[in-house]
Image (cartoon, rainbow over the protein chains, first blue to last red):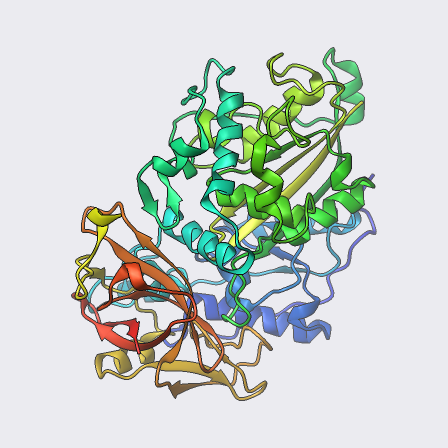
Length: 394
Length: 138
């Protein structure tokens, strides 16, 4: 497959300012986007792919997607290669379009180096000086938001809307601990009970210490190859059959809904591409920064009805060999590891072990031929990126 | 838990100076005068939060500042119990104008906070920056 002839550049806009003391960097990104969309005869709601590099303030593309209210984005790329990034992005956009991952890709660049006398990028405010960091920073970062209390807000609202209980959330940690006992590298190997979770100290209402993932050092890596290379290697083949991605953020604060995650969109994309459904999955790696993270994502991916996640995870339903959906059989972030506070790669690694039949015998799912890995980055309580991957043993 | 009960006047945690940008400066200048501003779009008519130069709903660049009474209801909240400066409450308020605002709840018993509770804005001093909007029971 080649990108030759698969994509066209249909809009372009060069911002007229050369000295911009009066508008922010996010604003220049947005005005440039608006100009290019107008040039093409499109609107921001047509954009389903967003590309930016390190000049975009915030967390990858998350801050700018939220600032601009790009509600229909299903492909994101923040590859950073300095000044060449945007040429590379055009190539990446063509690849994404050729693969059917997006149809209208927006690439933006903006910055105000002439204004650096007003202070550097990002970080805390300096009294009396203007900054040019993430546009939400002044309105959010000052309130002491952490992963704990922003995910706590999600759990609080989920309990309010659906009657979810702390006991139900605790079952997620219990299942993870049952798996971690067999993992010699796991940070926490002790099997815990629902009572242990409920009796652990409250960290951020309603999340207890044992509702939270571990903090560990560590790392991981993956190799993805062409089919030809895969056939030449003497290892079991894990075929990628579907992928989906989605941002989610307040986008202006209307209809705020903290009980849903981006999995609501990334999940169906991945399942549709793979031609399978949630009930076909033999194993699930589900990002578990907190117990509530797992519960919300399971619902949004379609493993159960929205609001029924509490019932779904209770009574050991996530324990391998016991329940219907074995999850995070390495012990996950809740017990095994969460290297550099980013758990996405370990989710894929354990799914690969399961599909190869190389998980610990005590947790190996028999005839595991279909698996999902799903993750959330950023915060479910503010803005985040969701990614879903469906894999099949060949 | 009894050991985390907080006095009504609590939040010992100091609010750091907000990073002020050229885009948000009018908001913070008004905050220094005790006025709570939101942005409304002249094109689609909707208010949004946090304030932007371009409307995140319709992408018009015709957005204007509007003074708000800062009244609304608690959408959700979480009390941070493990903090070196003592407990504090973070949450979202759904303003009567529509958008939700991330904030702290102050001057209240954290154990009595509830989703749906009516709250109103006030300003709290920050560390060498302009005062920041926080909310307390109306």
